Length: 334
Image (tube, rainbow, N blue to C red; front, side, top):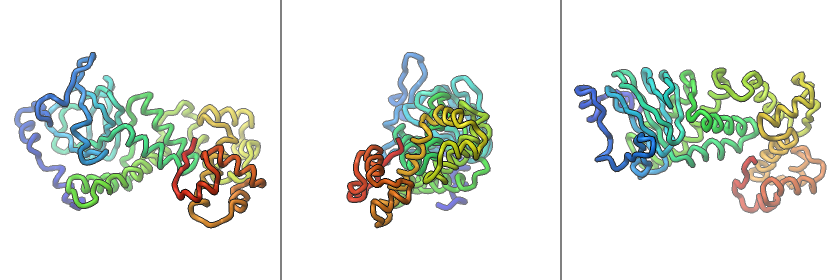
């Protein structure tokens, strides 16, 4: 399936839509009601068992022409507007999604979707909670302190508001990646499920780019959001010899104020952030080069190899030699 065939597939009426366009009544995807249970709130809750027989990710086109009543999920749902617009009511709040935008809903978030029109095509990408965590806080979080900060910020936002909207309509890479994922899922071939799993961290990386440059996002320190990211980028680039005083001078901050701001926004001290970035580079050098431990220690900014050994073991739980010998990506930013 190519992108043109995907477009034709998504726009054609599926069997449920053929009924809904005539009756205007919602038709359940499921046989019977065994997947919908009632909790104390009396809101139907979809269980994950039905969706993940092929793997940890399931992709489905939302059926048009009838209201989707209030419901919840026992899994994470990512809504992608392929075409047109989509109105949702999430925890009673109206939200409008436009073509190309993405909304991620947390577990057990009551939401409903009024009937979509002919040109309104909504695609649901659902996953287990641990799949989302692995993508945001696992592979992405190991790239550096900026990625780690953004991944955690996104996760915190999702937990606080129970959903997060990405204004991703202008990100062409993201559109291309999601279309490729849909082609693999709707026209399954050998290794299609593996391909979708490989696309996931790439997709979330693009969403992190959207998050980074989107002025609509609000953090606890909205006015300082850009400064925080720029500060972390500066530390990433100058981790070998960066000092809090130099950083403060570069960005016109008082050093004490800057140190407190970094701690409050990232949960980590300046020295911890520098150490984390050094560990990222140390682990890469250990995995990808044959440089000696002493040379690596010097290259990342440590004058004492014994001090580097101690910090490395404190961070990773093993010595540099053990890390290199195992040949595994053992580390995680902590």
